[in-house]
Image (tube, rainbow, N blue to C red; front, side, top):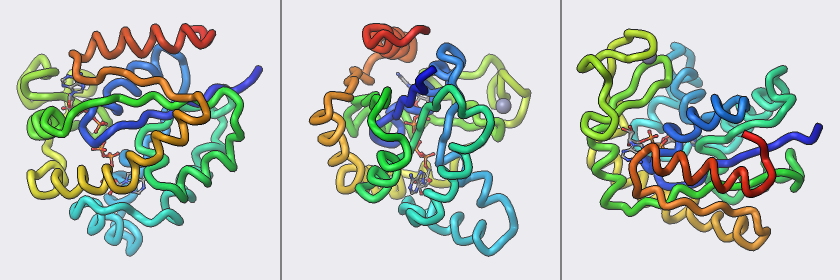
Length: 218
Ligand code: ADP
Ligand code: ADP
Ligand code: ZN
């Protein structure tokens, strides 16, 4: 069977992680979230972990070398035999080249979650995270019990890069380095554009509909 690769694009806070998790359950494809994997790496008290932590807290990009090594390792894992969902990668031209070199062109699609900068700031301002990877929003997607994860009962926290100054820097970097990649997917006719400004369930329905239209079973 041919593998399927779905790549989420969009600014920080557009809802990529939220949608990737729901799509992963529906399509039975695992997720590679570079942000998530890097956050695990930074918790280790190693020199590499400390270096990653310093970069993430400033809202800058971790080096291609480190991120690409993470991707390579994840792509050879056992559960990758049906394909994968990518969240947060590729984020610049070199990473795009790395990925297309690995995957080729067959059954690779990019899903752009299109959201304005203003809405992104609202979303990131109220984001709450759990160590298990679950994501909530104080207003748009609150947990059943305030401050507690519905899935694992863990205590929710604010990511240290979800501060207004760092959010502004991450957005700037997105527009400079990641947004230009949309053009590649558009030109290769592999772009699925979604109005990400809708509520979570409407965005989800749109994504599922457009994926089914490609002949991919969900
Ligand atoms: P968001 O979901 O808000 O866009 P992520 O969880 O994807 O944030 O990423 C958090 C941080 O991890 C980024 O700001 C960056 O420092 C680092 N990071 C994640 N993915 C990459 C990548 N592909 N290349 C370089 N750095 C990355
Ligand atoms: P990303 O992975 O793109 O950084 P997240 O999935 O973490 O984005 O979502 C950012 C914040 O916005 C989270 O607090 C999440 O609960 C919330 N969110 C996600 N999708 C929507 C939506 N369609 N409408 C409102 N809030 C949303
Ligand atoms: Zn949890």
